[in-house]
Image (cartoon, rainbow, N blue to C red):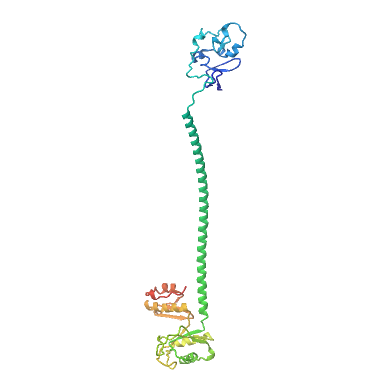
Length: 359
């Protein structure tokens, strides 16, 4: 166990020391003026029976062998001085004073070194604080990064959900529009369209329809006609009061029975009908067709143009549906929209004239 020298106060770091057998104070070998070689030659009895100067001076006076002049520590035995010097005074002062400063002696302070140490301590504290700040910043950045990542993931999921919802809504709108167009076409199942009849002032459209029906062999009366009128914008008049556009507006008639309409259309296909005896003026061909919605009329017009371009032999309308056939013996193809027309017939060769009005 380490302890301090009772004489100089320095720490005794090894086993080379002398201990007073009475007060148990310890002294290093320099202070008792004993070399390590002599210490090694001491017997255990000699080492354990030594007294320090204080304990020696407290002994009863007898001879001068116990005075401090004989040595810093005295051996409490008859052969005390067998290995020590006969004249202790000759060895007094031989102790190296350069290695052991006096007790209480102040060393001159090194101001620059102290300032440097203080500065290093301050710098060390600052570095520690900076490290702590960096740790806090890293934690904050990590928290912000996790929050941003979570927010981005939530927004991405919301966008995906919105895209899916938009796609679903588009499909729903397309279905509703298709359903609406179908219902509109169903609503026209009793109507027919008559084209090729010139317009005249004060014309009687019911009389024209009844007369035309008789010419193709179908009996029609006023009670069979629910509504009849020309559709489309009226043609502009020239200075001589004749239409500039030679193509007259079609006549649309809604009958009270679908069977009567189908009979008229079927008979008109088997017999050639003209405007003779219907209206005055130039004789022109007259056609009876099913009435179509605006979208289906545009689709039918484009289908007829493409069947000519791609050498399809037939293109017709039946019960509001548009059909094409490549040649005799080939199956009929139903055309629902422009996409089906592109796929089943072919893309338009004149895209500048194509009107894709169907949504």
